[in-house]
Length: 248
Ligand code: ADP
Ligand code: MG
Image 1 (cartoon, rainbow, N blue to C red):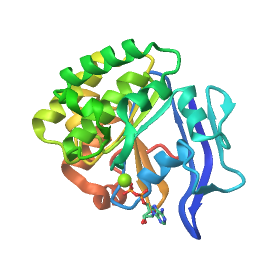
Image 2 (cartoon, rainbow, N blue to C red):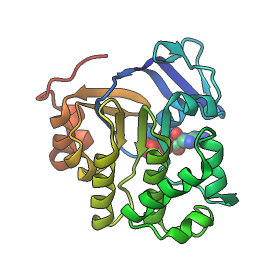
Image 3 (tube, rainbow, N blue to C red):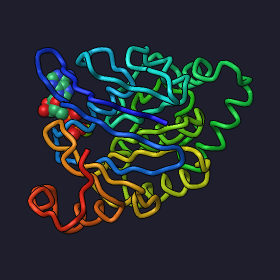
Image 4 (cartoon, protein in one colour):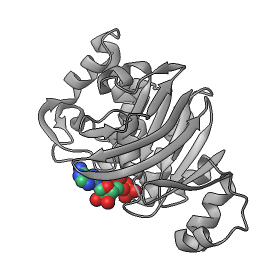
């Protein structure tokens, strides 16, 4: 469904990503791993078309067989791509309800409200947050729960969750995982950028992708996530060839 070919990207005069070729399929779950600074968040932002990320000429990103390489972010979102932010920025003055109404123009305001309230209560988010500015005064855990709520509101075809489990207490992690499980439709694709197994226990990855220094260092099956996150770490994993890595 999402194909990335020869993606190289710079921000300002810094080259961040080099020749990344990956494909993501309908209904599958992916773990995108890599040490801090390896380019995971930049890759996710590049897929969504963050405007300050400049691609090399041979970069090609396609979604459902149409090129989206130069498409604006909001159009990618309309097509069904979703990114939850590692550190969602606060936007005082942008109300949650206004944001949702813009994002869901075909849904009645009353239905949007009622769905949002249902999800908020299932995620144990105070309903008062729904009438505040987006992320204005939200705690770290509340932000991540709210990103999860937005995912459910938007029902994207592919969701990239950038460290959805970071800075979230164990109970909240469980709540987020069971919420995702309840509302995930079989054809939806999940990509978890993570440093922990908490969400991967619930959503065992079909494929593990390991980034290092802006490149794809290794790919493997779901067990590779466990081996790296629980036992080996990235340096050891880069040295060993005990797991069959698929060259790209
Ligand atoms: P990860 O999510 O894997 O920790 P990032 O994608 O956030 O990694 O960052 C990858 C590299 O790109 C880092 O060296 C980081 O400093 C650099 N980088 C990220 N954003 C910018 C930016 N806006 N300008 C310059 N360098 C950036
Ligand atoms: Mg990151």
